[in-house]
Image 1: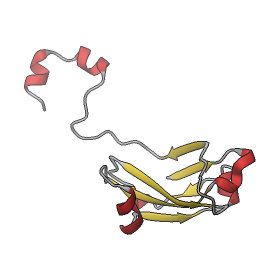
Image 2 (image 1 turned 90 degrees about the vertical axis):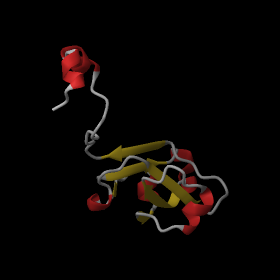
Image 3 (image 1 turned 90 degrees about the horizontal axis):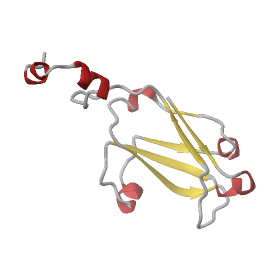
Image 4 (image 1 turned 135 degrees about the vertical axis):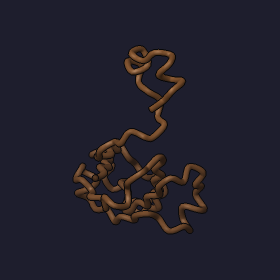
Length: 117
C-alpha cells in the first residue's frame, strides 16, 4: 500500500511537508485532525512532491471505509498548499453487505434475494 501526492511542477515548494492519515473517521474536523493521534503521520520531501511513492504501513490500512487526509503545512512554510494529483495504491476488498453488481442482480432470481446463502 502506498500513496502518491504530486504538486504542480512550478509550485513544488507548496507541496505538503507532512500528512496525517485517519481511518474510518467520517466526521473528523480540522480541530480534531490537529489534536487526535493519526493512524499514520508522514514527513514528506521534494521527491515526494515530484511523485515518489510514500509507503504506508499495510497493517494499519485494512478495513478502511473512510480515509481522511490532513495536511498541516507545506515545504515552503506558506499559507497555501498545492496538490495536483493524489493516488492511493492498494487492493480494494469487497465490503460485506455491499450491493451486488448489476450483472449479479440480473443473473439472480427473486428467490435468491429472499433466501440468501
